[in-house]
Length: 146
Image 1 (tube, helix red, strand yellow):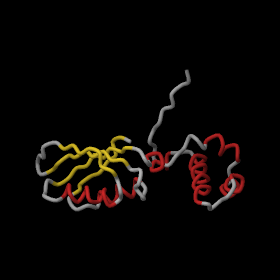
Image 2: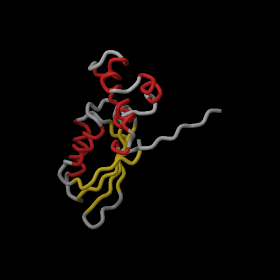
Image 3: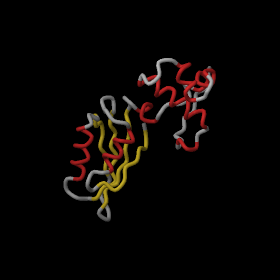
Image 4: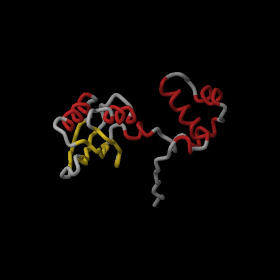
């Protein structure tokens, strides 16, 4: 039986340069900016063998979560309409809300957990989180599972 892979979420600035270049080659190929692995790797100054060695080991966070169920944890002001505006933002981005859980608000704040399927969402996870954070009454947005 094979060894199960382990996954970590790492800030891009902490990664060795080769991983960032491999991710960039993948992006260039997927957008059509480059048509061949050879051309893309030459432009970025890495070998094709390095690309092939690491290509399956790195995937942008938003791509990894595309189509999957993501669980957000949010701290909201306990005011009428805040949760409704948050749900409208998710609906406008075509996120399919599966569950909503909330604890009893204390000190004017409510902790809400929302699980949503992101199959049809047309922005990156980071952009979606920025939009959710910008909703009036939202204090904080985190991804806790996905």
